[in-house]
Image 1: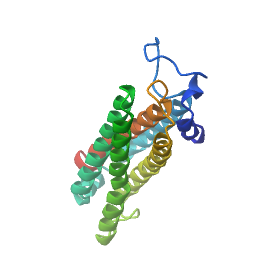
Image 2: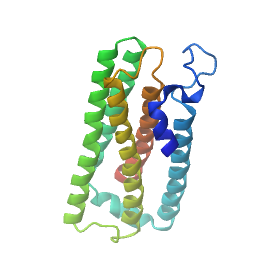
Image 3: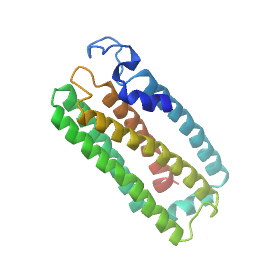
Amino acid sequence: MVEATADLGNPGSAAGDPRPREASGWIPGNKGIWVGITCELIEFTVMFVIYFVARAHFPDAFQAGADRLSRVAGTAITLLMVSSSFFIACSVATMRAGQRRRSLYWLAAGLVTALGYPLAKYLEVSWNLAQGIDGGSGIFFTVYYYLTFNHLVHASWGILGMVWVFARHLAGGYSTEDHGGLEALASYWHATDIIWLVIFPLFYVLA
């Protein structure tokens, strides 16, 4: 993941020189970020397997646990993640169109929105603890805290990446022809967003 994060500031790291967007087989970002995304997906695949094994053995605990969670908090986090992902996509699209200033504004919007996630998570956990819900409250909550905290860690790396990419963007580090770092960030953040879209129904809706 360190390699992937470092490559956010090195757009040409995947192939040495910027590649034309029309090139056959072109993939956004760079090899480093896709190694990081692959590791992230493998990690969460394992955790989802653990979730389904635990749910199969303790179905009543999962049903009762889901009813105690705040669906408002889960929905708020989902809206923040989806909105931030959309803003980052707009940043990439406007950069490709040569609209650097608009790209910077969209990236700033994505960063501000993404920062709402850890805040919402803090408020949710505070509410949980006030209701006596912690990691020792049963198997459902053990799995819930483990998966959601791991996702928060990955999202925090993405937010740090946004700060780095924003600083480079502000300093003129990207151009219409060469903005692989911005694309790498977008790729990682979209993957993290997709993982949350799996987590949300498993804990807040379907359990």
